[in-house]
Length: 158
Image (cartoon, rainbow, N blue to C red):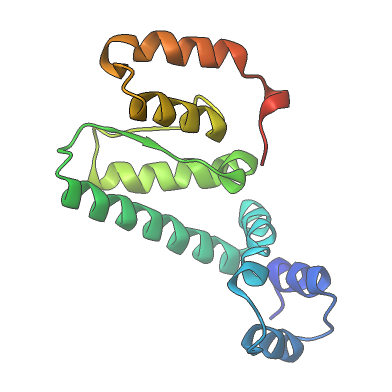
């Protein structure tokens, strides 16, 4: 039985059948990046209650939470820490952000799941300052506030 997801993926890839989709996906020249470009289609279909897309998104959220769980345990962070979910899919699909956050909080109820306060280049600035010996413990809030004030939607890049 065709689903919204099936129709949209075939249309996105300009393919005429599921058989062609299977051939497309199994092609040795197919890169992971090409397949990953379908993520937006999957997330949109899941938001429209497509059952197959919904299961894919559930699995992706599980994998994100498991990765966080593994990192937290290896780094011995305890139970209370921030988790920043960053990237275009989280920004464009709030439901995906919320689902991943719920799964992370299943493992760590005290974790603070949030969107980034600053664009990526600001993180690079903070890292450079810390690497240059700037005492971030004393000035971090002031520096972050200045960066927040200086950064705007127009300066962000995807």
